[in-house]
Length: 217
Image (cartoon, rainbow, N blue to C red; front, side, top):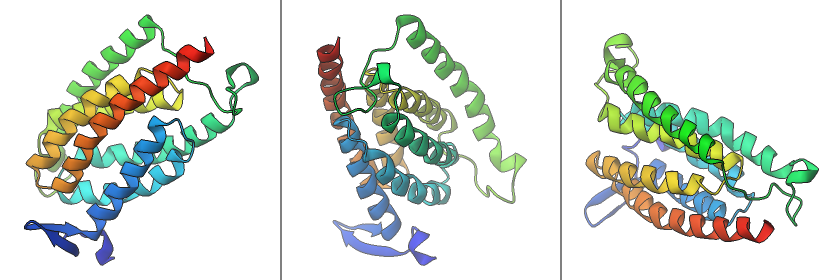
């Protein structure tokens, strides 16, 4: 079980101790996101490795909303894998997978409202987790509201991605930028660098999916 501890060091680079857990989880996540940007269905099974390892990582650095988010990601990776592979006939692209499309303005407004309300509610919960469940959470949540925003908007972005909606990438750019700050602040720098790279991959995904959606209209 030492593999799942952030204290089990794989190597040290520029004075930064890299755990096996952070390294393998981060690499798996990078591969999964790049494949997603290219609308490649293999992003989902590789993503399962990433979220499983990050569940253990975030627990140990007291980013509890992010920890819970990995459970959601695990389930949605399974759902997304099935959804992309089994579209209805009217939703198929040339590869017989779910085609890329745009979300309606009304739908996008609803998702943004859910994000704001969800961040406030989840942030209040995260702020008091160590008081509600002291046996499980020994320390206060770090950055409860910012971390909750990342969590809630990641849920929104993931739902849009499962449905293969272009706008998911615009949400991911915002989420990845804030997450990058949080991870550097909590001294999990390799993950922070990964999320900085994710911002650029998300930009590519936004461009690539927009072009693909326009091609099928």
